[in-house]
Image (cartoon, rainbow, N blue to C red; front, side, top):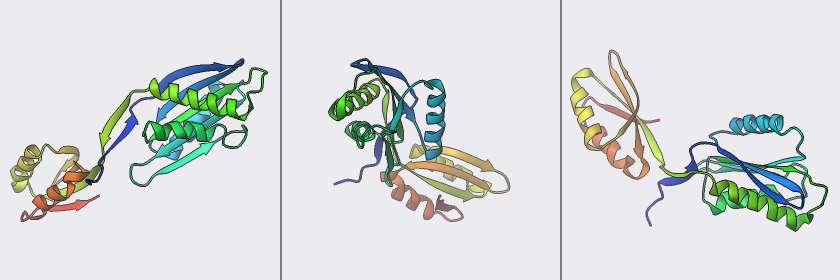
Length: 202
């Protein structure tokens, strides 16, 4: 079995999706995130925007190989909100994502099963409204060399269709490349075999 080197995520945040059940309103939001700091920022923003709401429940997942995730019921009965939201993140197989479902209580209690269904459905509708993309898991390498070896390095980068993410051309040259994980070892070996060219993983 070949090692997976792609993952699914969203590129931009999704406009609010509304789901109603027995007068309660549920607003769903999806955000592309890379850190737990992003989560705090978005929750703070939504609490300001929806200051009259009763609950701001969410789930997030970050990472492609070392996964970090968290669920929050925000005062709803245990596992009736955060876990159903997280279940949809798993179902759609997305990562680097935060889904927040905001509830305005409509005066009628939904019961635990009703809440689970409402939070799950809102999260599902939010993900269906999101633009999900497939991205590659990359390995970053720093290549260091003298100007006289510039043509050699650039030729390999062009031949292998490698993505340059940063370059610093001063007394010596430094180029950072992002290589798709399954091609990383082969690319490393090509540069590593060359005289006067240094490559290391970042």
